[in-house]
Length: 184
Image (cartoon, rainbow, N blue to C red; front, side):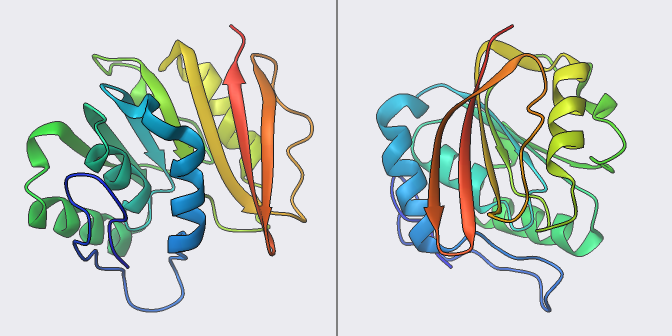
């Protein structure tokens, strides 16, 4: 797995051993960032269910200002920290261990509001809607935030929590990538 574009283009990222983490494929990541285009400059990024940190790192490589990575698994957190250290990104990132399914209170005191959020929960665990609800409740999103959710096409986003609207959805095999915008 490599960073696709930007200042870290071609740099290798490590992934935890085993099947506990399912990194976003290069093909999906490339398509996703092509859709986002040049809008990443100076964004405050939140990478939920971060796994390897590849989505947040790709955003940083393409001009995002800072990123916070949240995951519960210790192996994922160690991998994210290793990837950030290899790219010397510790100064513009934070890594938090938290159970996202419960709430996102860990974000209530963040200095900046996030205007780009990536969410890639384990497939078919029904974690998407509760995580979106927790994200809205914690108050950490900017008014112009965009949320990108990678999920199984068999897992519905309904009901989309009030405050978000589905603006686009793309299918990649068994994977759906849903783009939501805030309407706060």
